[in-house]
Length: 53
Image (cartoon, rainbow, N blue to C red; front, top):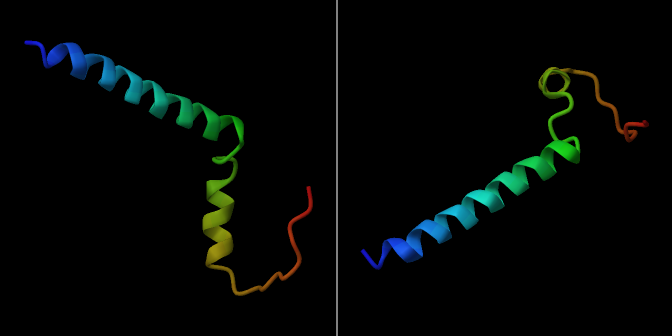
């Protein structure tokens, strides 16, 4: 039973870290255009210039 007093807080902390990483990835716009990226990777056109905002 003493093990649970260690495992429960550790699991809550790790869950919070995972949630914080997910929220950070949402706020840094990591998931903006997955549809466009999947189409660009199959395109035969080569674009050596960086994408402009």
